[in-house]
Image (cartoon, rainbow, N blue to C red; front, side, top):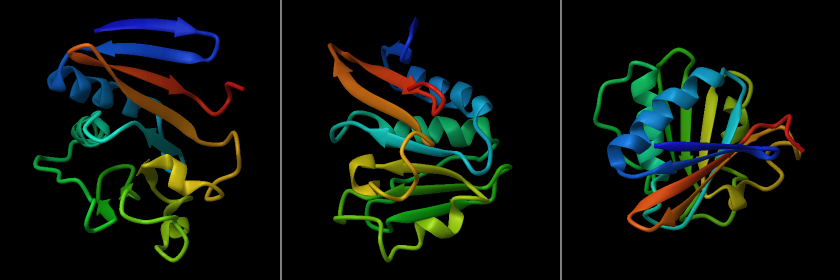
Length: 145
């Protein structure tokens, strides 16, 4: 896995699923309860795979399924983690996501549907896209403007 550090954050070239999980396990060391991570990328890009790595880094045993039909999954890790998948909804209102923002590490797939949930510039952004056979992952912290 190669890493590019730029003024706007970091970009990781991720060759396969195992590397995506390893990246998630590595990134979680930067995050804490109260952090919101907005996961962006097309279907099949690896948002849930990255989340599996995050959970593995927090000591949660497999398996972890996508919350596409449940919308929200809670995990009793340290810190506690809330994983939401907004693919099947138009927005976050009425789901109760705001109840977890201060107490959980919050990973939200389909970040464009979370507009207005957190103030602009306060969430981490993880953008995943296809890059040949692998993926390119751009990570931007809230303090990078």
